[in-house]
Length: 533
Image 1: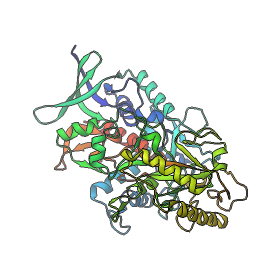
Image 2: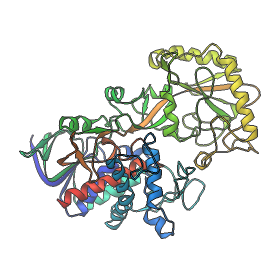
Image 3: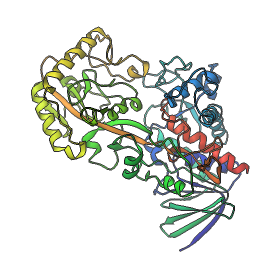
Image 4: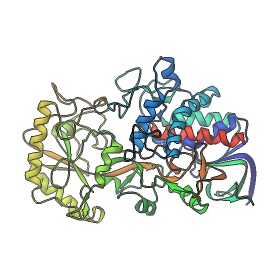
């Protein structure tokens, strides 16, 4: 059955960015059709905390807290493009477009949040922290000299609930309710396969598969894509990402639809090797199509991560997007990824402790992906046996011959650091974000993230693999959210936001809520640009 539709703006994808784009366009008086591949709205936002990172936001300004443009841009540029960042450069070492996209975000993110609040689509407040600070939790990179505002940029939906937790559904609900009040046409279960262009090359319509047959929607002012990344397209992951990724937390419809459509239109691609990375329990990740969560800050103080030789290689409490990159290190001698699989080791205190423990399971229980041994040598045998069962998934990773001796030595060194309170190898516990959610399992610690292991077993291990929320590369956009072709010119009538485009934030995860903040801001900009034309 053919169902022709004609509206001002078509939005494809009903996640964090698509919902904002549809709400903004409707608020500007445009007629809107929102087309969503899944059978429900929200996308990956529904399983998120729902924060959105907004510099110089209205809540900071009301409190009299200054967030200077120069400092904030320097912070973003340093994190987004560390290989080219130059503080003294007029563009901070970035290309002109990269720099202008960051400036656009600084200036328009709060504008977007304020607009959504004004029209009644999405109300916000400073996101609370677990320990009750009115300015919320610390920035992920509050220790950097460029960061003049270590708290208060994290916003969350204001719906009267003061709790901190998974609030993404509240974000989706407020925006969805607004769309319903505005009479926006919403088509779920419809997958857009291609777009149509007129004789001038302008994108003027989308073609979708719907439960009732082909769906053709004409867009008089523009088509805005917000369909998520290519996290669940294994071929695309293996083609573009810098190494294997075992677990994906994005909803399963994030299969790179716009990547393929954009390539067919001649869109320029950017940021293709980047993703919003994290870690996952390896055996859980490879056994299910979508992981329910990443390991944000691993649970436990008498706990550490080691490589297959028994040596620590990373700050276990470091920011997840940075910590996960350790998995991609290359061993030139062995000609393989040195940290393809890492091993979390811990003691009985951690196993039995209460608290937010994912992915350990209930206190005292031993899930199938947790390995036990009464001593370090016995644990080494058990871990290597498990690795032997998983060689098809790990590139043949096995423990080194001296693992048992080396893990014992690594524990002794770790214990010494814990007693002194300073991690001389990786700086664990050295920044506010590493300690703010740490549950104390031992009394009198000098460093709340580190405690000596018990003098005798049993000891436990869990295999750790690379994971991600979703990818952050795709068709490039300009500061008006217009998709660019390979010559750098806008593809008229085509806009993008969220995980389906090349992130204006480059490779960075500035702090909690950065992906949603970017999706929200450039979804808003896309709708304002389209409806202004």
